[in-house]
Length: 245
Image 1 (tube, helix red, strand yellow):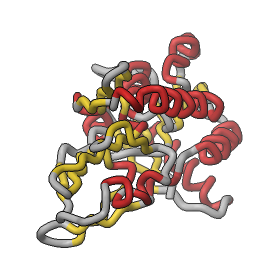
Image 2: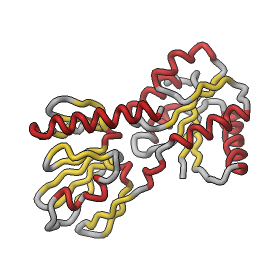
Image 3: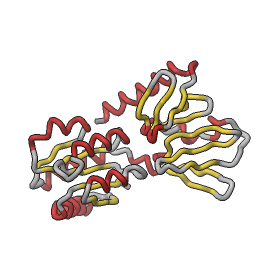
Image 4: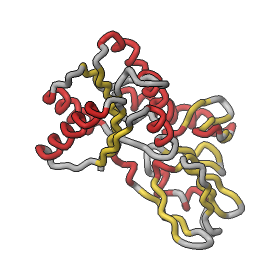
């Protein structure tokens, strides 16, 4: 199910956009989860621990502009779709630093918004609902793949670092690390860059010859012998994302 975040400091505009989206859903055979944010700070707090497929952002807002907000969203998630909806046409060129799918001028044209929603949903990565079941010492924990920053092999167990800052540790197991995480590695967003590490490419903030820096500042090493393969896989991932935009 697509998750949509709308951020606008004008309550009336929030309501209009929400009603348009609900009307769109009545026409098309899909549902969406919609969250409204009346201040950019509230959305910034939310995206620290959760992910949205689509963001609809105003430009002129208090404290943090829609331009800055879009850049921060793009830093955390290269795959999210961003739509700007604003009364200010002069920021269109600057807005494209966040690679938005469209820049709409208020008052919104309902049909233009509908067309943009169709395009955005067609490009949205809805695979984030995929999960992985982890047997911990206490229970069975089901984790969304999109919430995993990285997996680290330690003493015949795996520690899963999550976007909310939590670390979930599995029980010990007999198979090797790659076999245990085989279903995770089938997802194109994940890459094994070291004997003991698998990373979520969506959470990469910096790439160097010997390491990745991930969301939250976590540094994960790249095995020297694997560097050419890891580099090529990461470049292929980035190129594929550019093609999809």
